[in-house]
Length: 201
Image 1 (tube, rainbow, N blue to C red):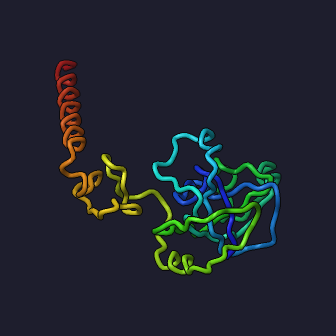
Image 2: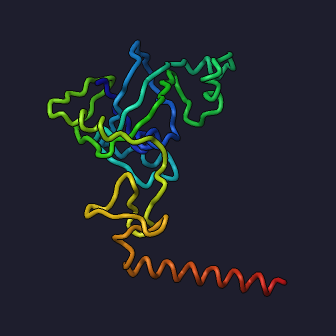
Image 3: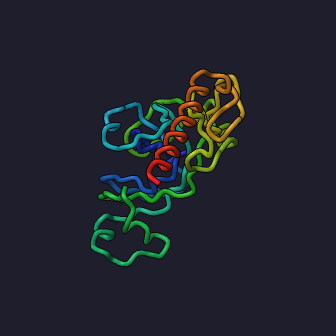
């Protein structure tokens, strides 16, 4: 499968569905399935805020379909675009010179750790990892649950396994002092807010 190495946090933003284009200085005739490889470099982490809570480095994190390549001039000049691409006019990650349109993004349940390369490259799946990854694809987008104590999600659960006690608390952290302290702090905060409202009246 063709693969493209993209530095974090942008590889993760693609997996989250927030970044729908990849900007390159060069074009390609290739269209079709594309593996997203998160590079090892951390040099771009200061270019975006807030950073995603989860980021893998040096790994293929998912796949998408490369469907279109649009030159930035066509977007900035306000030239008519097909209705399916009209969103490019307002997309914050459109920079060019070539905007690679990425669709049908799906995340691997388990990243495939491997080295990346420059340009469009072929991933050698000698170990069958890509085949396994394809069997565990999950829709892109932010996780529905994230534990406020350990940060695990349904995409990346605790190593020992866990389930959801509350939308923001996993079973592994249910008895954690931090979880209890957080709940108490929330109660105190609500109590203080209610008290201020009464005083304001």
